[in-house]
Image 1 (spheres, helix red, strand yellow):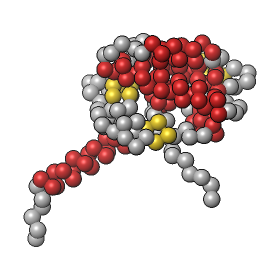
Image 2 (image 1 turned 90 degrees about the vertical axis):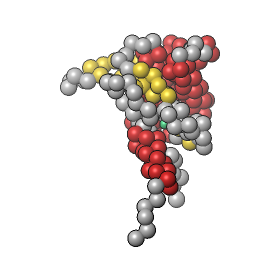
Image 3 (image 1 turned 180 degrees about the vertical axis):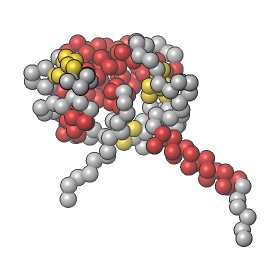
Length: 191
Ligand SMILES: [Zn+2]
């Protein structure tokens, strides 16, 4: 039987979709890129298809992921950016080779360097994180209100009051928990 891996949580912001490849960081953490092949799969669905991935490149990817998470958490809570995380993000950005190209229907696509290496894809993700961390994009970094999640996400809602990293997971779970708590407090009369 083929091994089943955890599915991906894809959002519309590249950098925070990438940090969401590890979820429930403050609970029972779920690693969604447990093997080099799963990183290849994630990059492919994120428009950054690479040729191959070694265990060392997977480590590099996870190091970048945790650095983005650390920097985004600091930014969301108004703390200073951790120097080690900034260094990793900058290194990955500097060492990737990729160019933005325009498709015939007017959309942007990333063209990785001729060898389509993992490093090139990580460069694009690092640059995306830099754009968000530098406050260049319209939105605000925030932390998921779920105590077991605390994922950093990019809030682009008009009021900037989004509470959950993902309405379908954390938001929904909270809604259900609240419903259950209400039922306990106000049990329906037995008929
Ligand atoms: Zn969450």
